[in-house]
Amino acid sequence: MNAPEFVAVVDVGKTHAKLLLLDAGSGQLEAAAERPRTVLAGEVVSQLDLAATETWLLDALAAAPRRAHITDLVPVAHGAAAALVDADGALLSAPDYEDPAFDAVAAAYRAERDPFALTGSPELPLGLNLGRQLYYLETRQPALWTRAARLLLHPQYWAWRLSGVAASEVTSLACHTDLWQPRTASPSPLARRRGWDTLLPPLRRADAVLGPVQPALARRLGLTPTCRVRCGIHDSNASWLAHRTSPVAARAERFAVISSGTWIVLMARGTELARLDPARDMLVNVDAGGEAVATARFMGGREYAALAGAMPAPATAADVLAVLRSGALALPSFADAGGAWAGQRGRLVGAEGLTAAERAALATLYVALVCDARLDDLGAAGPIIVDGPLAADALFLATLAALRPASAVHAASARAGIVQGALRLAGCRQRPEDPGPAATALDAPGLAGYRARWRAQCTALTNPPASSHQ
Image (tube, rainbow, N blue to C red; front, side):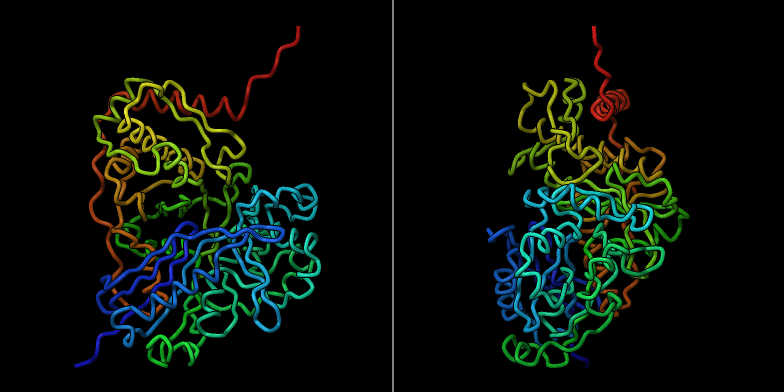
């Protein structure tokens, strides 16, 4: 009888890092470990906690059940992140994209950027354009910059640490970095002008085997010496990869995927790239096969927490109806990074008397309304597949279904996108997961009027009336 085989997914998000151990045959989750991520003070700019995350990851792998039967390690990580290393492999810098220090070079960097038509990358605040991070380091830390030998995108940093082989990969390279041209599949003029392209290791496919785990690591962790390390993928693109061939998507000419977490990333098939508006945080992602994907985003996980609190009270349909009757509104934006209303300070209207549960319902309404608006920005049509934490939120699903009656809203199982996408990269051939039946729309007669009022207020934020002079 053949021994069971397992795939380990190294899932490094902005807020948490996770290790998921999956049965390669069934796709079932065998074990999981998780830790919150932190940001470290740096000499000039804040840094991602790569060393602490690596210590935790190696300990988690060493303690994983069935670790001797792990055949593949697949890194998945968030975008707008990379590490600079020197010729000896020492880490020089891994900036945190949320550091406001990056705004100090915003004007100078703006003059360097290529047009949106070339890169599909909008101008974003803070360090959400990886190019701005590099420009900041190059101009503010020149002594450090001269030591840089390699630029490793976030998933490929972990692949390098595990295998010792450096690579680049297109889903992270094209994720609002300013470094890539999707139409020509080549580095951007900016990257070439400044020589940043010379720091990029060779481009490999997300499913490419970079090599086995480094022998010393395999011995230390109890892994088989033949355990393969895959190149890895950007996290939202893992969801897209998983769901684009699901039975729901396969039956539709057009569909959309909502990948949720700290960021909510909406990707749509059938959208003309010409309709993307960079001023509304819309961009061109590139999927694992090299195809351009129309995308819109907002920092919905963080916005929900800002509205509902760190420990939100359970909300029900009755709480949503109470909010609709009260007329209370949450107007964007409650996060500082990106989104269609970037730069607008979020505010509450008429929410003073809400209970804790109604406040959580207001947060759910807000996230659903922004998703609805972002889907309209994309001109999305057809079924909607929701992945990540929002897939487990029945109230959100019912509310979104009520807001978009022409589209069936399907929930994927917990972390289905990351899991199924990683299994596919590892060469596992499970049947694509069907997200299951469409959500039943919330019965909320006042929702249409509430939505119209919310949109009108949001439009007023974006286009304030001209001042009158007497």
